[in-house]
Image (cartoon, rainbow, N blue to C red; front, top):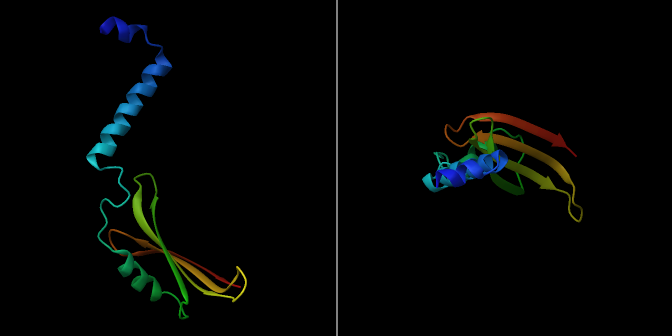
Length: 111
């Protein structure tokens, strides 16, 4: 078996090692999108609603990972759509830390 390993090209060895590491991380649950989340999507919507000055008619919530350590963040988009178009009268996206509930960023656009 050791002779077989010695005969494998270096790039192939690297791919095999990285693939094994990724499989172990996935099996341990480390790579799960929802691991470490303490704030629910409903709570994130409530938190985001406190940072806008309008009543949202449309809400979208997405769980994303940010940064080097892939910290979970809720991206909550609150909007007032313009009927019959794909545009918005108001649109604000609030990023809420999914672990602490802290507001990380608010991005607003008017029309």
